[in-house]
Image 1 (tube, one colour):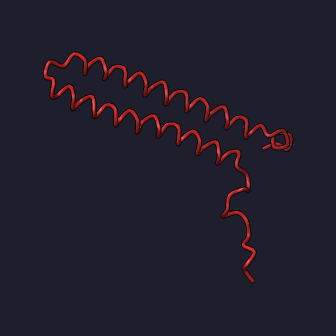
Image 2 (spheres, rainbow, N blue to C red):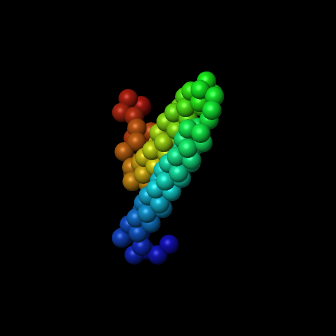
Amino acid sequence: MRNWAKEAGLLKWAALVAVFALAVTLTLGSVIVLVGVTIRISRMANPAMRALATLAELLTGMLWLVGTIYIATHLAVLIFGGDSSPQAKPRSDSP
């Protein structure tokens, strides 16, 4: 990579744009799928199956959306975290 690109931090900003696009895509995709599933569940005739499907949708939707937030946050910390992680610091009690 060219020196001016590293100095300007263009690689970090390009990675930020990619992570942002990934987060928006995953969130929008999960919402579209969950709305489609909600429509299908509301058309079910059997109340017991509808209740079971609603519970499954709630659990799956929460896991999916929390997972999306985790992925976006984790990638942003990896990109912009630098050397602030505990593993990167030398231990003071080592000889």
